Length: 282
Image (cartoon, helix red, strand yellow):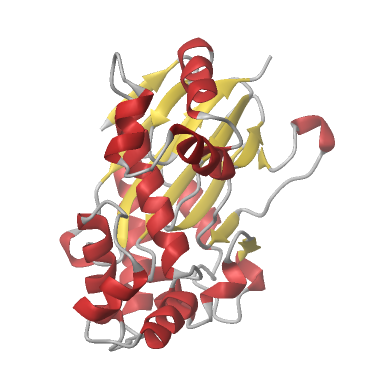
């Protein structure tokens, strides 16, 4: 799928069937003017390859470049990035447990943090991988090159507890985040303490944090509709009043639902509404 905005092109690719349990999708994002991206809170892990130009956590004049390969665990707040005039990045959106499998580390240390690839004790993309990736001209071949490395690394790892976590996440997703920790533990025939430990170790979030993010995603789906009623959105997400809904939304996005709708209609261009939105820098 290709999405075109002013001065930016985003291509989205689905993973090879053999990677469906580990990879959500891939984004190739190319731009020709300065952009800012605000990433919404999310439970997925992300690998970012910076192929051309610069993508920074500060405006370009600050001169702070991130590494060519970056790993990010789950994050519970919005974060912004700024680009140079011309840039190209590839984003690998992983399932919540995938980075734990690839690195064999406790994911709580990756929570709300971006690691350079060299920070990892078990590097995924050694052997001048990014240089070789940037030499490939065709976008689909770039994705295949990344997938082959992921397959090789995943073939060397296994964790029997992953299946339990996949089932837990599936139950939460099916209920759109409206599922308590105790009820989830009961469905899995697992103690609440064990369930929390698995989430903390393999995803880096508590169960409540994960369910809140899924709840937020469902809210954003509703907010993309025309003529939306915020009262109805709050009701569908099972908030007991509008004030509670506003506090929840602002905690994760920094703005109220009403402010978001106003900003979206004026200056925010949706690139992929569950993962990121972008606005051109002035």
